[in-house]
Length: 128
Image 1 (tube, rainbow, N blue to C red):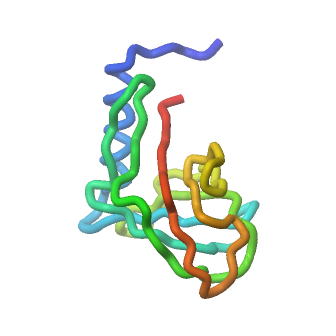
Image 2: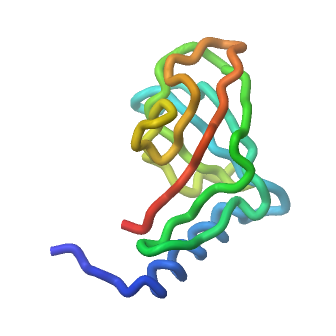
Image 3: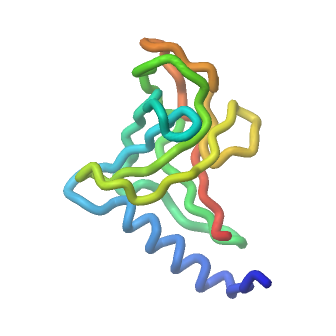
């Protein structure tokens, strides 16, 4: 059975998550990849700090949206991961959908072509 935490603890845990993403001297990145992490399609630079934590349930909402990036390769966006400014993967397995979907990261098009500008319109991680 899942554990149900009080929201103040969820908020504290999500703030620690945000602080982890902000590790290093500069901003981290969000990478958007194809299924199985086979190909990096897009890289977005996070704000520093990366976002704010609020709500019940606690959620990390990434700041500075929308963000734009040029497609690095062609493919279908499926997964996201976050790296700190040192290039260390801090978390992976995030869902990616087109705008209006239910993904952690929503982009203007999941069908990405090399050189295509794709906006990251929202990013949110909700405490599980």
